[in-house]
Length: 434
Image 1 (cartoon, rainbow, N blue to C red):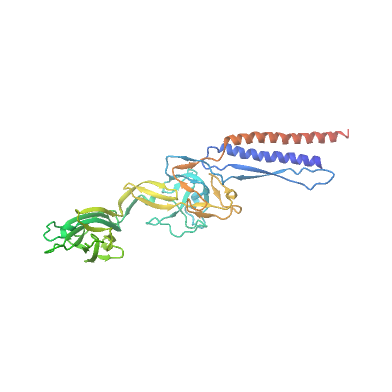
Image 2 (image 1 turned 135 degrees about the vertical axis):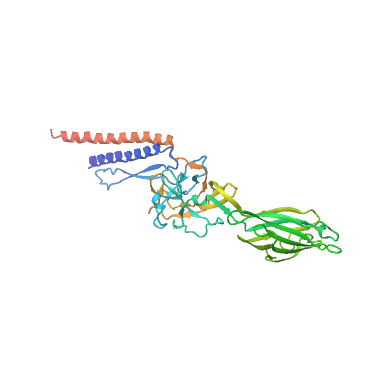
């Protein structure tokens, strides 16, 4: 029995070392494959029930697995759509069949790194045919409430629909100083005009003209102004709103708005300091300041000065590039300088990373032994951030693999010697009959 068990143990030793040689071969072959996770083997002994009179060799068994939890070094590239997870976690991708499938039926895989480019339809994909998935953002760049335990809210990342964009103006901030001397009796300074450009829903540029006219009293100082607002998109001769301003000259609040009223199509909210206007493309709020607030429009003994006039919105712009930041937000960069968030790329994590099922092209799928998937914001919780212009190197260490190769060769030869020795001993046993 012990001779037969020795033969079995030797044969098992040959098999497990052959399996180890296979993993070493894979690791060396993929030493330059971006995102490759090193394959490893784990030997464990098998023990048979022993009798007191003889020892029976149980042999050895082998377990192979991918060390998915290990992370490789990041290398810089010149492409903004070369992305990698800088730490724990993987981002979601799908196959070509997943583009047209419903979210519940789509095959979702996970990838540590990838070099993506837009295909003929604008979908970001790798050369091996894996398509990037993300949560679509609304016009404000918000993702909203999404499911983090499944991919039902994920969509293939497509940049073709964002080739051109225009963002209408919805708010204007007026940081202006009006000259206090213009409201003194005898002043003949006249009105001050301030044109402010804005953009409509189609990206066309128009302008609002604010005409500031001081109220000149017979004596003293009135500290009052009338603001007529004209829109170049309509008839410039017709005002779309009027705002009456009165400023304080008290010691504690000199130069600040004391009171404001709006009429002729405009409304003023003292709680926010905004004047609401209705333009052809929609409502626009103009911030002039709250009563007794130092921000917005002031009246001091200084020249007419538009010190801080800002607005939102942008004209029509052509998509020049896409970039992804460390939080996973994929942004379109337009020729006008506008940046618009299109998608958020989440980073997936499972309790047992090494329990994921390995697939082609360095992709992995959730399995029973990996545990349930959870989609984190990049850089939040246990997962790392997403690095653009980067690819992850293979986790293979050539020096360590060559050392393991020598050890495996010696171990295989030793087990072969066991088989040879048992064969010779059995031959001797056979020769006893002669």
